[in-house]
Length: 111
Image 1: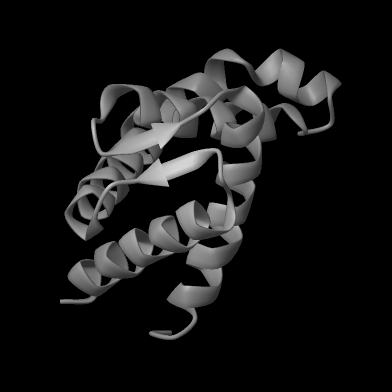
Image 2: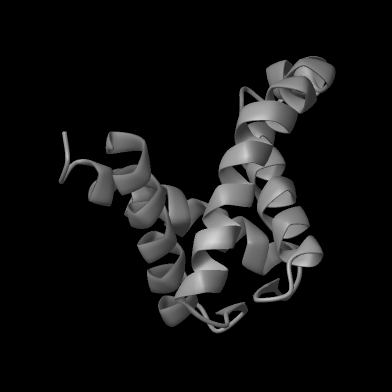
């Protein structure tokens, strides 16, 4: 039950990000649900491998490269989904940053 609530809150966070940032578009709540699911799967399955492969550059940049990885995962999700669109890397960087803040704040509602 809690997993379902987190999924819905992440979809709401995506809608908030799309409302705040003109470079990110979400077509509907259904699209936000699908995008939240895909982002969750990418962050769970693909991102750890990317973090491991880019560990040297992450160490050299004192962890700042992780922001780039977050943006790339966010941008990739926007490029493979129809109802979720991210208009470039810089919007992806800002969108991933705002999304993590909003999703974190919303998840505090259920904690």
